[in-house]
Image (tube, rainbow, N blue to C red; front, side):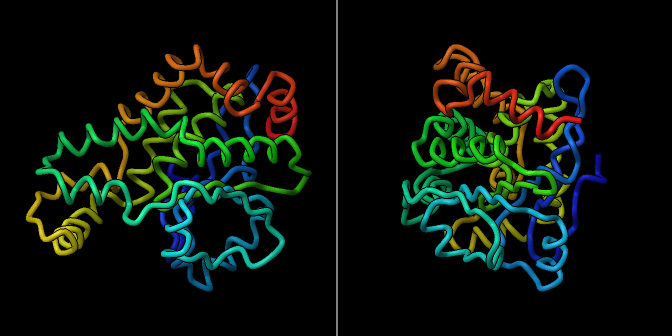
Length: 260
């Protein structure tokens, strides 16, 4: 499992989310689907390594204010960039939460569940999720696609789960890939530094566990998103078809391109 993690110097949580068994026992081709955090701190070595991956589609799920704040050192050219200009914020939503609530670890987890409940129907994400599947349906031989957000775990995690579902990956493996963020992003190691950074920024004295949900993931977060789509749309298949335009014909095209 750890082999799918691609250690980079300035890009967090970069990994291949192909290789899983999909529909009718076929396997998703490795080297075709990647996921990561943002590229604002990418090193020259990172850029050289990424250039070898023949990525031609990048779905950037960050809000416009995040793109302005983080920047994007990759790609310079030759990549079809998918993004939305909707949903601008002054501060990140979790920062607003932490500023105005007396938080503990459980309150932070509950906030994340509420975020996952809303995310699949946010217009900005619906726009870019839709474009992602449109481009997967037209991916050419030798091309790969990448999805990222700021940390590569929440907005990205939902889209990767939907991509896996469309390809016939089992729920167990969907969650295994999702939870791999905790290893790929070195959450345990980074948590003390994150606590100190956010406490200084927010003028708080919160325990480190308050910040864990904003660095890593828990199964129940993604469960909330999936169950919301099932409740609101009727099923994940209906959500894909009616909200993102991934009907049976498009799903079959994507499977032919990505499954061996």
